[in-house]
Image (cartoon, rainbow, N blue to C red; front, side, top):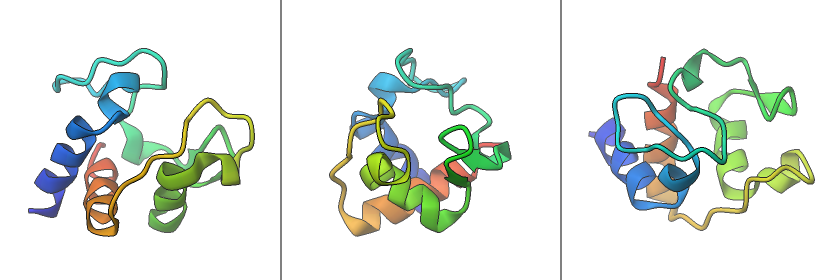
Length: 92
């Protein structure tokens, strides 16, 4: 249920307009493809480990982890953020 809710959060937010995930309607070209996101060891080209806590922090305010990167801060409720992180962690 959390993974599906996270998929919905991704598609309903600005995420899908910048990022691509193969097999979904997300076809943004501004940010990197997230198709195999869970296989990545690092966020932001080495800025932080790809773990649940850092990933949530990255989504909410990537500038805090890697100043100057092109990802804007995302306003999202805590429960939707948790679901979004669960979905991104499922993308192997």
